[in-house]
Image 1 (tube, each protein chain N blue to C red):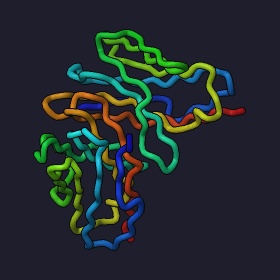
Image 2 (cartoon, rainbow over the protein chains, first blue to last red):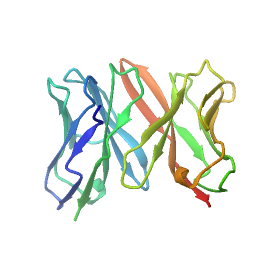
Image 3 (tube, rainbow over the protein chains, first blue to last red):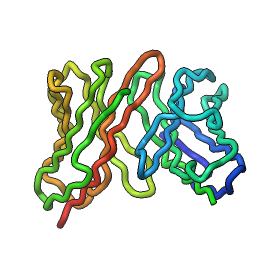
Image 4 (cartoon, chains in turn cyan, yellow):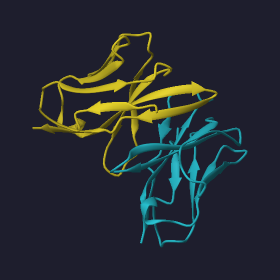
Length: 112
Length: 113
């Protein structure tokens, strides 16, 4: 069974640009969550989607948004990129939201 | 604010020894407590998880001990091996419709051969 797939693995952007990250969950998983990982702040919850609906959101500015499609694939968008957005962005999926989450290997975003 | 405090930040253990990582939480509304292992360049991988109504859970060389009254839980790695060298994260999960993980800051474990 394939794991959580995130694309691209690496991205380099400049300040002010926007970026879209993609996540394909494990087959059959309907819940998709996004996390930001930085050396200083650790792993922080961004948001969670289930059946195309955002059910929970962390403490991030509105520049961070996401969506989920009918096939459970999810995208995350960050607009007006700032230097501080440089991080590893992780996607995790689970069955129906009550089973443990399984993570992808992330997208490493670097802002120049 | 929901927090999970993890210690130590880094840990060096000799091969064959026992690695112990501790976590403490504040919110009593958490539904379960997973541990994740992360290697460089990889995402966190689920190791083991425990519900708050269980005091201990063992899977192979990995054991979670849970003290509900003290709001503490710990990961024990028995017979630690160089391949166990990684960063370990404890987490606490709230399930209110959606599932939200609150992570500890991580422990970088090094097993010396």
